[in-house]
Structures are given as C-alpha cells and as structure tokens.
Image (cartoon, rainbow, N blue to C red; front, top):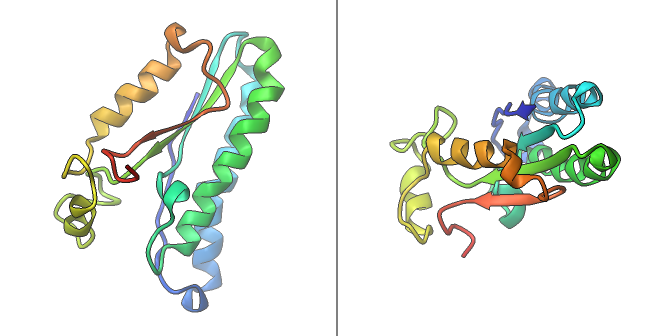
Length: 158
C-alpha cells in the first residue's frame, strides 16, 4: 500500500481560511490515516509506505506552517503502526522527499531557484527517483526496514 496524497496550502498562519486548513488536514492527514486502516487486510509480509516531506525534518520558510505540520503527522502515524503491524511481518515506512519537480513544486516555479541553491546536488529531484525508493521499500529486499523515515532530498539537509 502506498499513501501518496498531498496538497500544499501556503500562507501566514493568521491568514489561512478555516476551510483551507480543513482541506489541507483532510488530504495530508485524514486520508492517509483512513487508508492505513486497510493495512489490517494486507497479507502477512505486506508493505505500507507513506510519502511525506523532508520539510517536516528541517522546517520550512514563512507560510509553510500548515503544510509542515500536516505532513509531520505522518511520522506519528508511521512509527506506532510499524509496531502494531510488525508481528505480521508488515513493514511501515515513511519516504520524506525534498524538493521534487512535480506540479506541487515545479522546477520552473517560484521556489525552485532558492531550493536549488541550498541543495548539495544543486537540482530538484525527479518523481522517478522518489518512485525508485518507494519500489525498493515495497520489495522483499527491504523486509527488515520498518518504522523508518527515509529522506531523499538531494542533500538539502546536508
């Protein structure tokens, strides 16, 4: 099972409309939680992989408080769920991508230049690079990795 849902509602915390706060929390937290309920139906040895954001590891800039908070909730979901499902051989992990060229954060977007400037690799990641990590965590080769946050951020936090 791969939980890869996310929206980014940005703005100063005092100015965020309640409906936008509710929408961000619904997509970034509630939907993932509800999907994880289905993990109980996975076969023994299954995999649960959620996609968060490396922003929850190193903090973001002004206006990213809501997004950072909502994605940080996935850490609190991943670790205890790994213990809950571990006896059945089901692994639960969290992939924490840094800046990746997607519709949410395009390489030509308003934040891209500043992001590239602080990344060790000097570029945004690709969706394929993140997908490769997810595929590995879903494989039998990753059967001893659980409750982990795996950061794939091009050295943003280096």
